[in-house]
Image (cartoon, rainbow, N blue to C red; front, side, top):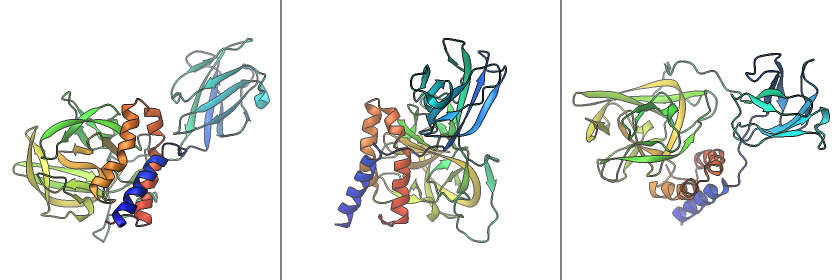
Length: 343
């Protein structure tokens, strides 16, 4: 009965994300210019509140303007008006969900054209070194310094792609074919359908797990609850927090062979983070066989809960899928915070 309840909860939460509102920045910055390179006569209005009409700073070179925008997924969306007060009878230009964070755009008006940039302001800590060691007196990785215990890989970790290239985790995009493995541990490549926290520069505490496998050595940096392969065959995993010196993991050597490795040390570090979801829910990061999922319940249930999201991706509805990111996020936190799932 408990398993059935858990499974239903996972599916409901997964489906709910299809209509869930994405967490968004509360303010944005809009700058106007008189040239197509967005460099001359700059006038910027900063910390503009979303979801309300705002008159903008334009200076002497450009006539009055106003805007009413939101920032779903931190992407500016809404309307720019010719004149103050967001007059619906005025000439307008729509900013319709396109990523305009770094673009110089034109507003073609009857009187004169002008150019503008707009960017949602995300309150994030500046990223420091890729992985900064933490000095602590206990064996447990501290909670996220920002109060958010994300379930991720380090953004500085590396992944091999099917085309032979190597990318950092924070460079991976949806559609990339990344190194993975089948249920027997054999090498294959799987398509990325979701990258979580892809616009974040925040850092959190993670475990840098060093390993050796014969003459090969390396390390993987992951959050406590992330799953690492614990057997050469079958979907058996162990959470990163359970690994210590001497623990067995499985690593990729010579490009394609899967061999047993041993943990040689665990260090606490602060690092940026990303999570990569593949179509087969398995991935090789820093040479280590791991899962895209975390230890939030029986593995088959986690995989089943992701099926609707994979369906959206296959249907070409990536924009809808991306709006599910926060809901998936909350799903994991609910499972942990309410102890809905057994560890």
